[in-house]
Image (cartoon, rainbow, N blue to C red; front, side, top):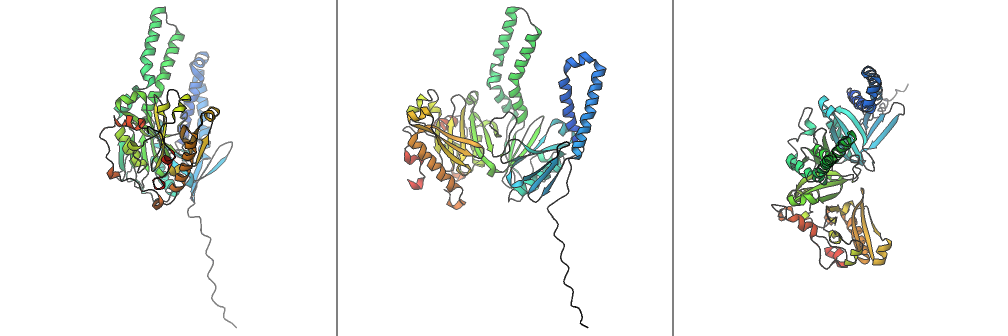
Length: 497
C-alpha cells in the first residue's frame, strides 16, 4: 500500500482589495446644515407679503411644516450618500429619487479645497471640494466632514493623485487645516488694510459719492421722496457696493505658503474660510493686472489659471488668486517662486506693426508679445493693463487666425491654447511674423516637454537683483517694446541664431 505523498499547500485565498475601504458617510450634522440653508431660502421666498396676508400664526405653521419636510428629506439624502477610496479612484454615491454613482480618477485631480461657511465654523465642520480636468463645475463636494477628517482625506487624495509622498500636517485641533504648520514655508500675507484700500480704489467705490450727490440733488430740487425712489436708490447703492465688499470678505487674511512637497497652500476668507492646495504642475498660466486707480500706489494683482478649476459662480476667467493686491517687488518674487526662472522685470515685449493702428487706433502700443526662455508673454489693455504668462510646457495647441480686415492689411492673430482654453494671444501681427511665431511656439512647447537636461538652462535666482520698490518697475514692464519690431530671427531660439 503506497503512502500518499504530502498534500500540496492549500491555495492562498485571493488577495482582498487592500486599498478598498468601507463606504463612509458624511458627518451626522450635515442634514441640519443643509436644511438650515434650504429653510432660509424658503422663508425668503415666502416674503413679507405672504406674512401680511395669512397672519403670523399661519405663516409660522407653514414655515414649520416646510422645515420638517426639508429636514426629513435631508436626512434621507444623508443616509443614501457615501464615499470610499478604491485604488486610485474616489467613488461617491448619492441621490434620493435618482441615484448617482460617480468614480473620479485621482490622476485627473487638479486642486483640493477646504471650505468652512459660517455655519460650518460654528459646528466645527468643513466642506471638501475637488477640481478635476474638464470639470465645468466643482466635482463631488463632500459637505460636511470634521475639519480633521477633511484635511486627512485631502492629503490622502493628493498623495494618490501624484507621485510625491505627502507629509501629514503636524497641527491638531479643529482649525489645524487652516493654520500654517511648522513644516510649511510662508510666502506672503496680505495686509487687510491694503485690501480694503484697494477696493476703495475701484470704479464702483470711486463713483458712489457722485451717485449719492446726484440723488440728493434730485430730492432737493423736486422736494418729494417716494417709497419707490428710496427702494431704487438703496438697491442701486447695494449693487454698486456688493462687488468690493464681496472681494474684501473673500480675500480677508490672505496667506500663501509652500508645503514640504512644493505645492502651493492658499488660505483666505472671513465669513467663509477657504484652504486650497494647488500642485504647481497644474498651473497653466499666470495673469498680471494693473488696474488704473492702483497704479498711483504701484499696486497690481496676480491670478493663476489652473486646469479644471471651475472657480466661483459668475467668475468668467475661471482663475484663482495668487496675490489680491501687492507691489511689483512682491509680485516679482511670487512669479519667480511659482514659475522658477521667470523674472517679471525682464519680460520684454514687441508691439504689432504700425499698420495695425487701423484695427487698434487707440490701444496699439498697449499690445505686445514676447518669447522669454521659459514662457510666452502677451500684454494688452489701455486703462486696465493685463499681462499673461504661459509656460511653453503647458501649451496644447497654437493657431493662426485671420479675419477679413486682417487679410486686407496682411495681419493675423496667433492664439496659444492651454488646458484652460485660450490663454495667450499675439494680436494683429504681420502675417509672416505670425507664422514664424506659431512655428517657434510649437517647437518650444515640444522641447519643453522633454526631460530637464534637454531644456535651456534656467536663470540663477541668486544672480537676479530684486528691486527694493516696484513703483517704477511696473511702467517699465508693461511699456518696454522693441522700437523696430521683430524680424524672423527674433522668434528663433538663441542656439538657432
